[in-house]
Image 1 (cartoon, rainbow, N blue to C red):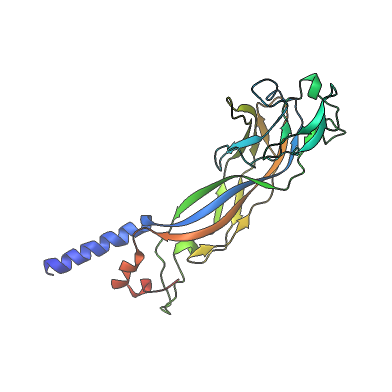
Image 2 (image 1 turned 180 degrees about the vertical axis):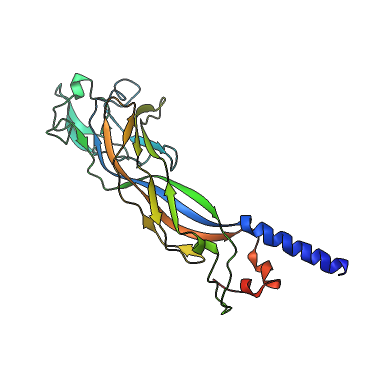
Length: 259
């Protein structure tokens, strides 16, 4: 064996070994919530510089950080509201669906059917549909696509090696958001493990979701202030090659395929 062939063989062996770690099936995974309820008591939006008493709530979770958006939608947006002291007007004029986040002040305390819309005007419940509280990317190492029956079509490897995906720990930490000072912690809810069975071809995976689950515990544990159901969805999967597996076609006809 001359030195040129030896170098070619070494390069091929290195590439074959490295490809096991360079190719991935990239999943986009989202955390969803629904049936949101605020029981209280809440004292997060009770004084200046807060916009008493309503505020938008954000979520930090295993799917991503809290943001000022639609992570945990409430029910008040441009509603006509009367406080207990007789002060009436159109409230919640921002971009979000907000919650009464100052239920401990007598001016905003229950029962009041313009400040509370659930449980005989003693609690709050969202009137918005299910929402997304976080989206993340997961990279799963896979082998290069290959053609086991030599018909020119890749039938193994890539995303086809991914059968399922799961999250062992699911949590949602709620904050009342404020642009003028620190966000106010409300509660952390913990949920059961989630998993989905995936249908994947070599180059992609179909969307799939887990069942909905209710909270299994809270932090702090002594008072149930909030409730929501949570589920996970794999939005899609796509095969990615950071080394270019086509180089393997020179050494093995199984890799000479399309997907």
